[in-house]
Image (cartoon, rainbow, N blue to C red; front, side):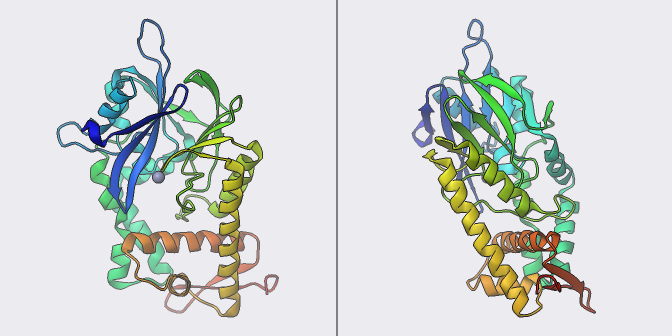
Length: 340
Ligand SMILES: [Zn+2]
């Protein structure tokens, strides 16, 4: 197994571990180990994110091997910080805290995801109702609603946080001081870890170099996730991170430049969605067909529609677009008088 392990010390005291995923076309998640020698070599390490279940006998087998390669072990984990409760970052969190005796730190808004995992059938139904309300039907509706079911088997138990973060907490790990930053947008309970002394940002999926992080609208979560995301990008850019440790892919420099470029892309899309609706009243399913002309898998269609919904919610909150019900119950989006 060691030949497959990709574990590197990316900056003194901080190891990056690329853990395999292989679901929805995402090859790996990057977890980070912050080493602290502790007393008599006992305990004290901090793990940031943890990947999914990988082995049939031991669901944590790849993580255990990766920790070994980084000079640690499950028993040494005193604290697991989960940047956000998406399964690729959170899958074996319950296993890790059970076996290590460490504490699980998560933002309190991650509770919304925990409720979803506790009842995946209801979560799939809710997603189907939302997409149907926006004009999707038939086999495409089924395929776009069921993504959660692919992930549930790689989460052997649901991790329950011991420490529910609010943002602003400070702690020491990996030989440096860190501050928890609440950065909602990609997920309402998303946090980044910031070490001001060396301008080091553990960014989770808030800043990625490989892709523009998806911002998805989910009913009952946030009213305006795109607005939250753009605000969080501005706050992180203002810190001017020198080195970013992302939740997927390898570390990269100049976090402010990347945050600005992601924000620019999101604003271009916001404008495009606004202009399409201003041209002619339309449903989210129609907007999706206009923006994405190629074939979409169910998961891709869900992400596409959920981000368009986040764009529409952004405009609705600012009074430029509004929705009305068609006689068949499907929502139709249109400009308001102010937005015309
Ligand atoms: Zn992720």
